Structures are given as C-alpha cells and as structure tokens.
Length: 121
Image (cartoon, rainbow, N blue to C red; front, side, top):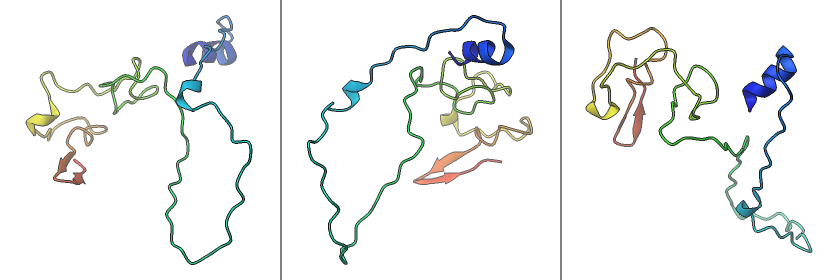
C-alpha cells in the first residue's frame, strides 16, 4: 500500500486507499495484569537486558525475497536490486565475482567461514 499512499499524499494523482485492517491480537495473550509489580530495591545481583527497537510486523515479507535490494522494502514481493546477479549464480557454489559492478556485489561475495562473517570485496 506504500505506493498508493505515496501517490495520494505526495503526487496527488490517486484516490485515497483505506489502510488494511490488521488483527495481530493472536500474537499476544490479550490479557493485561490487574496489578503491576513495583521494581525491587537495587542490589548487587548482575542481570542482563536485551533491548530491542524498531520492532514491526512486515505483512508482505517473502521467504527468499531480495535481501540486497536497492529499491523499496527488502524481502518483499516488490523488492529488487538494480545490479542483477548472473544467470545460474548460487551462493553455495563459492564462486566470487571479481569483475562485478562497483556497488552491491560485496554482498554476493560475502560468506560465513565457520561462525564468522567474511565481507566480500
């Protein structure tokens, strides 16, 4: 719907499109506690905190979608990369492209060696 919204609000060329009705209540148990606990007194106990930000639900996420996209939201049916990969390329072949386009090919030349990421050139 992003394209339609852009067309309506920025280009003033399209009719307004109602946003989709999304019910994500099944992702949570739907109940609120009747009483919230008060934080305990500070102590010497060490604990770890995982901070997650920018969490959102991508309703048109596609498994196997373009993840190195140069246009639009990545991993969606409309994502694309301006530098097309060669016909027959598959990352598991281990083939590196020495003479690829200037931008974007480091993604295709990158690998995982054991458990460490090796960025391509």
